[in-house]
Image 1 (cartoon, rainbow, N blue to C red):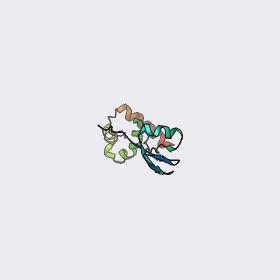
Image 2 (image 1 turned 120 degrees about the vertical axis):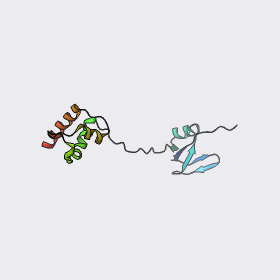
Image 3 (image 1 turned 60 degrees about the horizontal axis):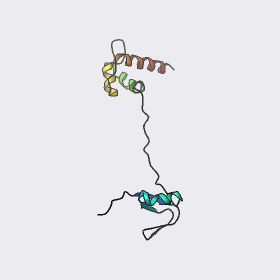
Image 4 (image 1 turned 90 degrees about the vertical axis):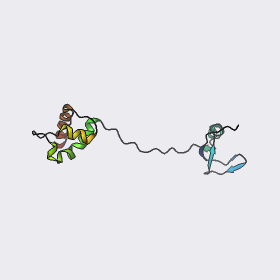
Length: 116
């Protein structure tokens, strides 16, 4: 029964011979962790570049509310009789439950920012 080994692709930095095949610098080479370890140690190969997707910053609930208020208040139907954004309209816009206290805090911050 043959053992299945997970292979990782590395890049040759120096000429490497593996399984009776020669790999030149810059060439990709697929190796098991066991085979790669000594070559990594002598810097004959390098680990693959890990490409990471940019991570969007996580906004606080207040920041999310501040971001949607301009769109919400564009529609006058989304305002209370005293001119505050409706809690329901904010909840729909941000996708989480917004309390009246949260709305009031966000509205105060929005007006202060808008006044600058």
